[in-house]
Figure 1 (tube, protein in one colour):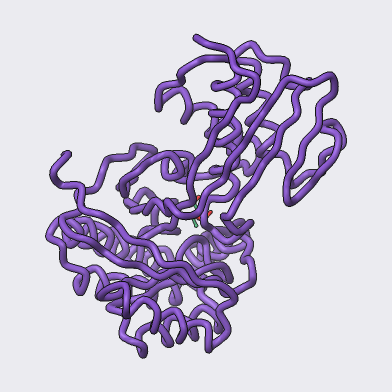
Figure 2 (tube, rainbow, N blue to C red):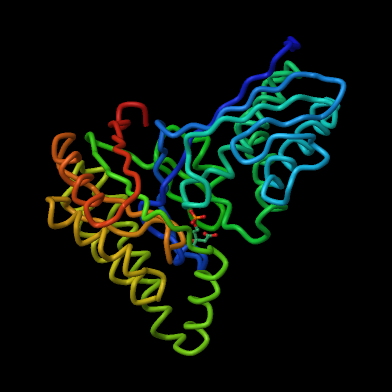
Length: 315
Ligand code: PMV
């Protein structure tokens, strides 16, 4: 390989289209790539370790706890690729909001892994890159279903079950709007809440998990048909089931209702819930503006529009 002065890497955000929480109990989930939300890393050899980012700027050795995923990504990839990881200047940029379920942590880790590989002149294949990002995610977040590490490096939607990703066929253009409620829910609290409910009412929760699994596969099918109305219906039902599991919030419910009122085919919370973001599927780009405005009017702090392009010709 060819060593360079400055190693560059990037990865994108992700949103769970369907299957959050049920994926923890073995059901499938679908993740969408958010190609317009990007994390980038640049890295050069230096006498002292230093990091520049929106969340922390200072010596590597003094970085606070919330930088753990990044530092772990740097350490494991530097070890593997024979770079002195403690003697680099690392600069991070990201347009993915932090702690909103949009993959900010995994995307930043993936950008760092790729930047280190680029600096070392090594071409990582997808499996090697994924293993390094997943290790960083695991160290930083403990238990994690591992879907983020795949999603932030995939250009197509993925169906994900028991650790295994498969590409989802998309037969037509789909337009989605994402809205941030402006608050971050704790993933651990949301996952624990569902586990506690399952202790009390195992049959009810298992039935909900099964219903979410069926809705997820119905969405896989509808993407393959190019049917956004059907995608929206399943999303709508999924939001009710997630609310039943106790992971929605008044703010999430209000943003979902506003999206439907403004013409979305369907909307639901995305990610662990109790805060974070709403994902809506809309008829087209023009309607996306109306839906985003309606979501903002009931309190959403930011919105993004993203389109999914057909990929059935390369499958
Ligand atoms: O909020 P996010 O995007 O990190 O998603 C959490 C998804 C859960 O299913 C709730 C937990 C998991 O590890 O899969």
